[in-house]
Amino acid sequence: MAGMIPEEVIDNVRSAVNIVDVVSRYVQLRKAGKNLFGICPFHDEKTPSFSVSEDKQIFHCFSCGRGGNVFKFLMDLEKISFPEAVRRVAEFGNVPLDDKYVKKSPKSAYSATQSEMIGLYEKAAELYHHVLVNTQLGEKALAYLKKRGITEADMQDFDLGFAPADQDLLLSFLKEQQIDQKQMQDSGLFIETADGSLKDRFFNRIMFPIKDNNGKIVAFSGRSLVKDDQHPKYLNSPETSIFNKVKVLYNFSQARPEIVQKKTVILYEGFMDVIAAHRAQVANGIATMGTSLTEDHVRALKRVASRVVICFDGDEPGQRAIAKAIALIKQTSDLQISVIFIPDNRDPDEYVRDKGVESFQKLMNQTGESSTAFLLKFDRMGLNLANENDQLEYLKKALQRIGELNDALEQDLYLNQLAEEFSIDKRDLKNQLRESVADRIAHTPRQFDPGPAPAPPPTFENQVEKTENTPKKLSSVDISQYRLLARALNHHDVWLKLQSLPDFYFPNEQLETIYMLAGGYLAKNQEYDAADFMDYLKEPELQSVVANIESINLSPDYTEEEIEDYISLIKDVAPLSEQISKVKSDLNEATRLGNQELQQQLTLKLISLYQKQQQLQN
Image (cartoon, rainbow, N blue to C red; front, side):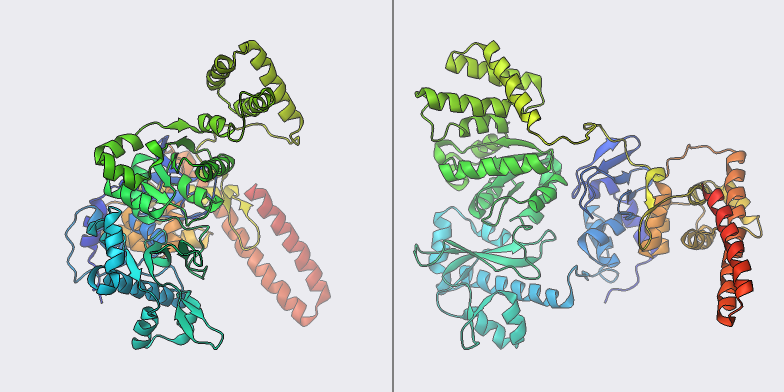
């Protein structure tokens, strides 16, 4: 077990990295004012409310309330322990760290039962990989992969394996390790027969481990080694408590740093395409699990990228899949979309083998075809454009596509192309386009929609305080407390002023706790540092509150009048809260004794106090 990490070691690791560099590996950030903003990785949202302060080295989400320093970010996102977060940040900043302080001790995002299931998948992956690269049972599969250009490094990087035919090898292996029968039944690794016995689900298949967003193996996809009409080419693990195919993207955890850096993700059709591209040093590629792209997939991608490149086969099924993906991406995000086809209808692995790495890299770095250009070609499928009726049908579809574009120049470009190709007067096309757009608007259900407007970065003042039942807007007293504590932490003169007030305290219990703990922190440290103070607090809830405090947009300087106003308002409301608590206690006692006259008097008094409190808070 790792020993207690000395504070100086923690400080050294934290100060060696910039939180922006770490967060940027997971979230696409854009500068807005002093801070950087992006889509929060902790909850689903459309408008960026996740903020990173480079000055203070902290993060804060104005929507879900999470906040903290670089260690807290990794702990919450990767579900790891504090020592493990320190180790990960040290690795990122190339800071040497003694193993006596920190050893790998991940804190699982899964329940104990789910963690055990992941353990089974990891054991299975090790066994399948060993069979592929080290045994006679795997020789045919190994020869096939090498023929496809898959190298030993690829097999290692992607943990490829082989499940031999009709061996029940995995079942025997896990039984030898005395794995519980129920665990094996629930894992999805086996098929239960009519008599209740188990058989290996995968046999005679090349095994592709499927990993979650944190790199944990949660499923397999097995590719049949031989053509067999009785069995599918690819067989996926069934859905379990740890695996949902509509949420998982192949290679996403491995590709994510490259995706964030390039702000571009390449969507391939198959696993072999992803591996071939990776071998060619195009490392931002992913694939779906043999299913169409889903809303969950798009949500994951828009957090880390601004552009999607679709690289599917150019055959009819491939083109239909591209059109479907484009429609979903446009419907659920503002991601830019382009389409790249491999020349001569080749697979990426074929192209890499035949043309080489540099040619493939150049191809993938092209701008590609716009989604509109692709769809205009796609709409020709099944039509004979020499036929006048088919020509009219196509032009109608094309004008609908062009009418959906918001850019007038882009519309003009495609109208010019249609006018030239079909020898039609461009003015006629424009008139038809106006009619098409008007018809679409007329048949769209009318809603009040002021139209998209660029949202300003979220601020502390416009957020809400989350309570057990419903959110409520922060009152003037709440805001005064937060602002005063922000001033006190960041301005020593204000801190000394509050310390000189013998009866002062913050009515908000969390703020009072932070105020009290800050006294101990400042006694040990000459200056206040938000990121360092968060480590001192340790409690995740208090760390989030400090992040909230630090997100308040206050001017660098303060006035004495400002501080006096905060103190006055807080001191007015605090005695009132105490009076309300006392009257409520007396009312409960009067109710218990059955004194109706006293109950009536205390109820009226309580109403009056509540009214005063409401006036102060508004």
